[in-house]
Image (cartoon, rainbow, N blue to C red; front, side, top):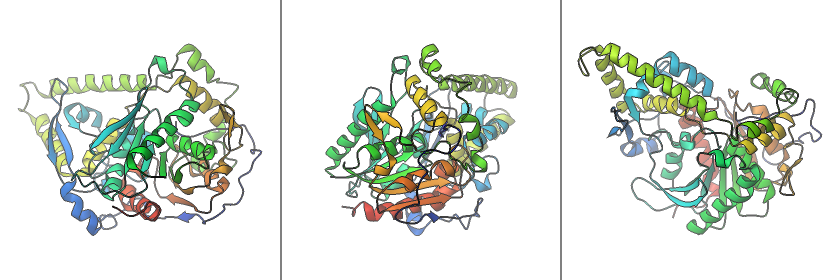
Length: 460
């Protein structure tokens, strides 16, 4: 999960009044019309560079890809086969299986993470990627952006498909974008700790980004778990090269006194210490096998797809209604970025990696169960994480429909940070819909661009 919990009752350090810029509330319709979602003139000019990648999935498992350039994301017209603003992982997963999308994914291959990139630094299983424009234009803004994602679900949600990609949008706008991918943990990584990520991996990536870009400062951009890590890094290195901190659905108060409707589940997690000791996971299993459920689900989907294929093709491939329906679905995916996005996010939602055992112990025990982060009682190698030491500019974005990280879990960051340039934005969106639903193109991307541009230097 990407949220947090705490001891029952109010925390010793109640967040003070927000200092600096007052929060900005962005209110938009939950299900926009096509008019609401019309692309800007600039975005229309880019359609020629957007390439959706869809192909047959042969028996060998290798996709024969065909590039089609078209469209922008708007799933509201696809019914259940589309991402809506309020979507979270569970609503995506439920519709995936209710609509038979899991069967389609066995027949239709969709390429994700297609923005051109190269590996520029490695540490153990982690990879630091630098992205570039598809047209080869090397002009970039002066302050680079380092994206930090979590360590369970895969980071390609940030670069889902061409035409519906946060990474692509930032790169096309002239930002110098990097992504730190922590990789897939194996049994040997059970001892990987939060200290390792915040004090070794992120500083190493920041150093490399500055070295490659020639910049003196960097923007750190964290989503969900990656946002929590980024906020902790910012508090530990207030005098470092961090210029801007952008947080999307990033919990820092895991057991807020007033969690709101979508945060009621935190009352259970904050009182779970008597029932569950997270240390036992590492002792018995090493890592939490969150990938095992994905593997079982995907294996069952593959078997079901095989059974459907055999039953629907008594005379072989290409001879019946089933293949005609598949061809129609494939054609829709090739022509409509929203359909491609739906297939891609349905793949992503069950594409998990193991949760490192030591990180799980502290993430659940210190954050969910004891809420130590907002109380200033988390120590990493002798250094106390104090969110009130964050001095850089902060843009803190939450989703009003986010039940994974309810807005109440995100507010403490801007309430405690001491810098003069602080802003909170609440979008009409859920945990996934914010990133890849209609709200991404309509609300999130424009807001990020207009906030980052004056804080990132000119393109040159």
